[in-house]
Length: 497
Image (cartoon, rainbow, N blue to C red; front, top):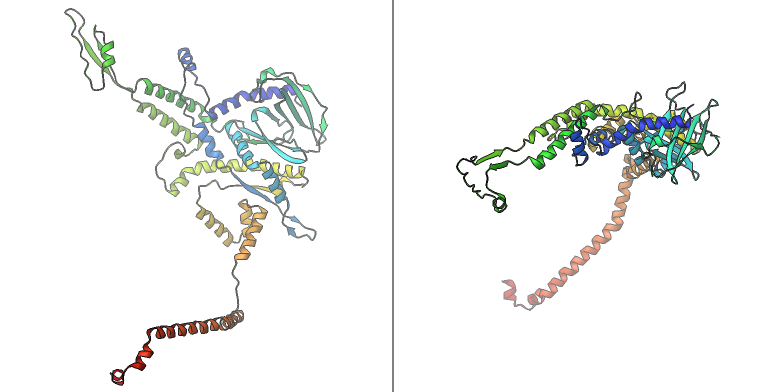
């Protein structure tokens, strides 16, 4: 197995490439020039970066959202399949560790520089998981199984000193771990330290045998063939764009306006200072025998030529990296079908990454559950990613309805979408509470009879009371009008008329 000094050399070998990848992603890369004069000038002056590497990476990572995990059912004491309690345990671990944001970070690492790492551990009796900077982790696959990590090292800075922790899978099938001290440092992070200056690590503890049957380092890679960033094929194009964009910036500052000049022996300093827009500059004629006065105008720089070159290079970057054109610039109003067609190459790439990353997430989930006291194997876990396609809510609902109508149980569909156990249970309870009751004819007649009896008992007294109130009101109107008294007092002739 590799010594600590050899592990440090592995770290040093990859750190330069990772630093460059992060610089391109973060837009802090410096231009490189063939001419010493240009290199000297731009080292003292600002440059204009137009970073499309971040767009290429974000187009992928924005679609790599984890929806949840599905667990295989375990039989209960009677042999029946029961709801698996491991889903609840994993949900608590996931939330406690803030794993959603850590998943986004490790995916970002994997596509910015080609690899990302998650290291689980037990702290204060709780299972924890940490996303490590890929520049500070070394993982070796030196055993007969090319997919199994046989040795790994984590380099970190703590307490003003360099430290290292090494894991090694031994012949007895168990992992041994050992800690090392690398001396004092002024660096705050291991990724920012000078790897070449750290050559002397000494043991600070004896090797300890753990109960782990695999190295507790989970290696997320965008490719199993090599460790390279998502944009490694278009780095030179990005450099070209930065050169042209810098030239565009300097041309806009210094040559975007027309330049007018005059050749004369007259001192124009005072005249030019007092000249206003729209004013006329009067030049004195040259004396006999002297060079005639001449005026010239130099045209402005054509900035469109720079923009055209940049647009062409951007199209190349999109074609090479399978990134849709509308991710780089406004492509106009697109229909849903056109948008899906343009994103088809990107979706195919993302789905390939989902298959690759899902294996590591399932291994990590099973490992952490086993550490927490719930023995689990990776084949009992399924990592569900969110649908990378651009879909509307109504489209998702229609797809769910189609699957259920085809015979897929609703609870299975929801588990595949990443719903947790308690969420499904709450949904079923709410559905039962809102479900209408189907009654047969006898039950309907019974309900009708009960409603009729209730109406007779409640409505008839109310109707009688209302009629009585109307009668009393009518009598009161008649009494106030004194129609009866006038009719009685009137003579018979008037009454007959």
